[in-house]
Figure 1 (tube, helix red, strand yellow):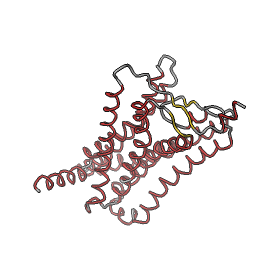
Figure 2 (tube, one colour):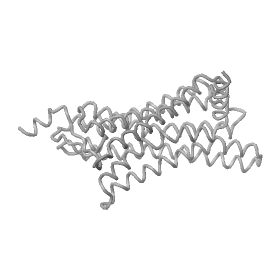
Figure 3 (cartoon, helix red, strand yellow):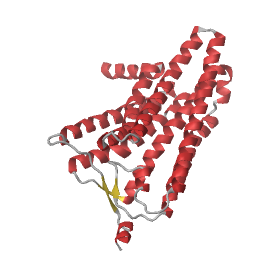
Figure 4 (spheres, helix red, strand yellow):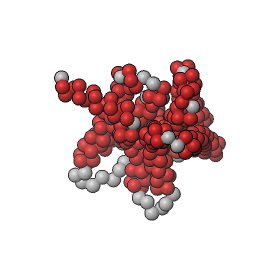
Length: 311
């Protein structure tokens, strides 16, 4: 009877941080600052692309998905964690927990697929400059964007749909936010198939993304070396460095997150913090990196700010 009550319970308990006395509100306000800063940077990048015609190009239409994806990842996790810290409730409805986990996994797969699409755009622009406008047509751009979000959606739906067949007999989520592994630990059935599909989906996302990016950047490097033109080399650096920095940053944070769960001497709170960083660090730094390394975005932003000041 006890298991049945768990199965039909709609409220779950999250595992809170151990916060020292007097540390609750400083942590909360720091988190609020981080959230507002991340939201502002990504909304600024979205607004620049939408409102400025000089950024209405294939590269920036694909780039548009990156800050949009970052907003999903940051907003799906941080507000709930901060709310639980200040209210000390640490409760969440089961359906909201599933929704949060779904959005966070969509974010994780999305950033890799988006970077792969952007690297392909740079490959066409640098290696086939005369054919760029004929290859990267509005229809092709639309198909690329639809494929990025569609493939990500299908993979994550297939992962979460498998949980519907498993009975739920626990109510304590062993994390400060919900994700697929945490939800699987609430079940009392055989999760072998779920684990296999989860590893398969992760492998597909990583292999597809890394393969496309590796091929694109190797071709770009070869083109720059063969042409020997300083302009071509400068163009490659300006357009590709930002994407490589974002990719490396995401993979490094993700690796540290995984490793933190593999070593027993890492505290539980540190594991929770490392798990949060993958949804905080990229959304904070992605728009800044693109602002620094992409000349058109940087110059457009400076021009807008200059116009605002003159008014």
